[in-house]
Length: 179
Length: 67
Image 1: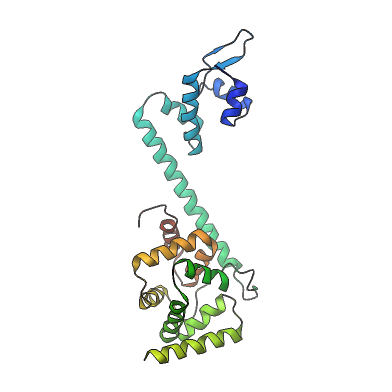
Image 2: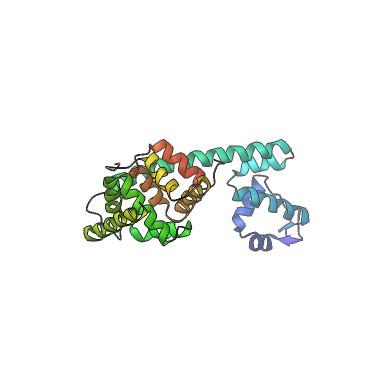
């Protein structure tokens, strides 16, 4: 039998949380000792494990209580509701993020402070398995397809004018060699 | 704020030209979203993609939905 102190340490919850769970009948102790202190047995610990999982999924406590009351179909519904709620929140946050990014993009931004700069771009291409030859091929194709777009893209990464000229020059050379 | 010269279709054409197929492009988006989520959003916006589609792309790039 575990005391509330041991429960608290094991499940990383405060004693007052466990007292609250008792109060709302989410987790009642199995009994009390001679001094009137709460005691928690194996069934209560197993129940606490289940409560922990559902808490980590963000399910509200009162809903957890209903789920544990024995309705098997309830857990499906509750998790779906939680997922739906989270997805809506993520969508709303992304919309805000995009809007703020647009507001923040100014021509005066420094390369290092930009959201996207040349180093980060190269890192992503490397991680996607595009080697140096691949990158140059890509620049060559970009220059062929849309010289203005290529210029604009390189500027958006905050690359200085001279380096852009150099990249575009080599891109045209690479193109010429291919034909 | 979109750019002067290139839209989403042209961008996709560029990747196809260097031999990246659809699954490679998906992986690229996933990496982008995982490592530089703000950069990903910013880039998609630069291509002139609508807010709604940006949201969708970022959603499946982070593994929230099957594409």
